[in-house]
View 1 (cartoon, rainbow, N blue to C red):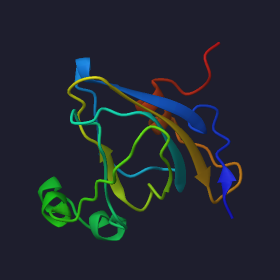
View 2 (view 1 turned 120 degrees about the horizontal axis):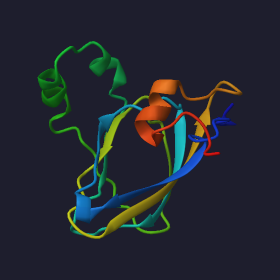
View 3 (view 1 turned 30 degrees about the vertical axis):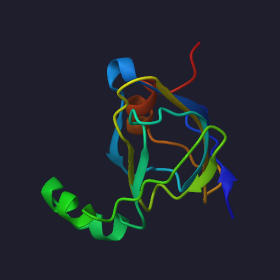
Length: 138
């Protein structure tokens, strides 16, 4: 059973990746079990691709060097074709993933996170890293 995240910042939010700043989101695992992603705007031919390595967490958790991770993911990276209006459910806590650097235009997506434990919220570190704060603006 899945529950919508009760986190006031991480439960539902949007990302804008701007080519003017070469925005990207590096390789990572999510803290939430699942996310529903709605693609609102893409940057065809200008980066901003969603890329992932399916079910890679068990292997990568045992690695201590980034070079080991790079070797492990070589040839395993998936890049699905996504267009405005694409909606996908993703198990980000199990699969290493990223958004490649955007070189022009803007990539925009809305994210809705889901957890297996009712009432689960992001920890303070994650809130500060992704949202620059730990709670709603006053």
